[in-house]
Image (cartoon, rainbow, N blue to C red; front, side, top):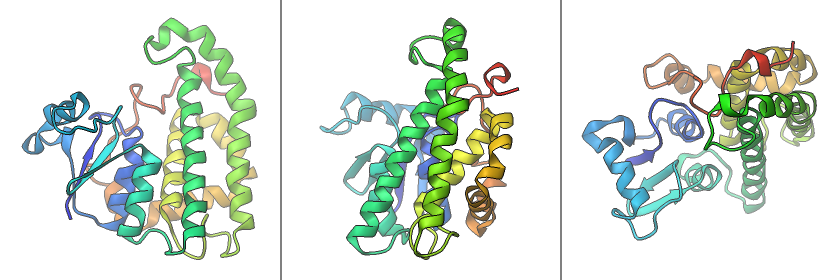
Length: 241
């Protein structure tokens, strides 16, 4: 199976959650919008317009596997994980992992809304005052709430505090790594300040970064740098002092 990932080129964004899972598993995939031979942006547009499928996705990321098209990060990862060996077989564990991924989805939205509280239709400069208020609340309240929760999940895991789910690495670990990498870029001061309170989460992120396939990916040109066009944006005025 060769998977086709559809996401905007030039930013890691939400597509990175999918890329990391595929890279970690050593899966055969193509990042379509970044590959002219695979159709590039034209291929992505045909799916969004409904020209390539009668079930058009609302927005990237979406994944094509054979004749199946799956949209939304958590939905895609729930589909991929059993096929890539990134989650145990039992239903209860899979549902628990999916719930954690949905919490990461909520966290991702709040990270984005810290710099675009009035919506993506306006430039950051058009909502800078509102962003300053939203980011202050995010840094003081929401950032600790989410990260402390994942620290608690690690400490409560019956399989040990090395993993979020069970006794082995799962796709949720990889997703939390992406969150931590993005936060260290976007809110370096706030993240540095809270890391002593979340030693398990910080250690998990480092372990994921050292996994063979992930380390090779992070050192490759396939890994796109964070920038001020994606979810994780570094505006120093929004970070804690």
